[in-house]
Image (cartoon, rainbow over the protein chains, first blue to last red):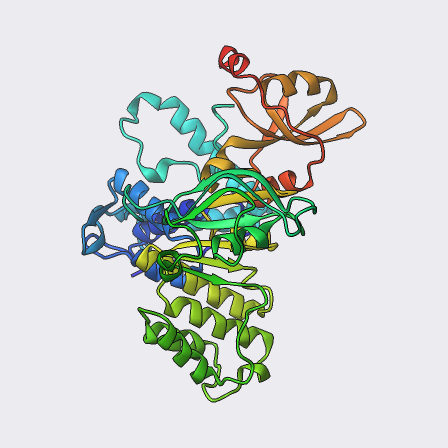
Length: 150
Length: 303
């Protein structure tokens, strides 16, 4: 199960917050394939948001292939986002922890570190565009405003 | 939440009302539809006609002109009264009744009565059943009035400033309870409020009144998506107004800040931000100049 927390001051629509929190839980292994998501009634009773907002988030996730809406039964996780390479004791994670420690010792601030990581990711992705056959939900940039149609 | 066959919660055609025959119009030429199964925010400044509209929908008043339908029924008829509940701002309750008496009255007066829901609503507010209604705090009186309204198991729940007397914790609890009611039973809810942040994530339809007329009756998501806040050079103002609807504008020296409703793509050098629902509603409430919607053919040419 998962408890959603809606930040009303963030400017991020509530349905996006639900999707992001579900994806995070999937990535961290808090939610696994077969787990049931809370019902719309449970979510709205805890968060006082509009029930249609919850349904919209669930529908979005269904379209992304993360969950399945089974009539009369509820909404179930159908795909995991957990990556073995991202787990606590994985080598990648250890190397990153070491790297962050060095960055901090060198006096870099949080914003500097994030900027470095983002730049490195962007550079890599731009050089390997053709290799990205399928964009997964986790490859979306968080909180980016949709302004491409401006 | 509800099927396509669900009746509209409210539908007004040419609706008008004035309190005295020679008085000013409290509501005038109102045309709007609120679909069923929605949680609607009824927004407007003091005197805009919110309470009048809710009283018309609840059958306490009769239209002076035009017509209003609640769930396809004429407000005030027995059919409408069985399916529509109104929680008025002054919460008319018998002060000498105890809370238990009041709920019993609800049970006797209503054809269908949900005692569990009614009792749970007062119990969650910590309201003692043996207390006299007249001796309760305003917040607790609201609880009792709400229990009476929810006990009817209405299909349409009309709430006039339901949270005004409540402390922050109780506001959250009541709102969550209302949302759960909507989720479970598909109840249509129309609530008037001045507290715009509370509307942001709870309402999925907005009905904006301004000086007795309907400014906006629309899906909240569509409203959010179709508006933008622009900042840019003021010399683009005229071009902007020909292509889009300028809801609100502010000029400071050479800088123009405008809340617009977009019709097609934007031209010019603008910094674009997405407003919150609250910002958009305030724009509509504050606006003083009449709006000129962009001509349709021009919009299409620009698109």
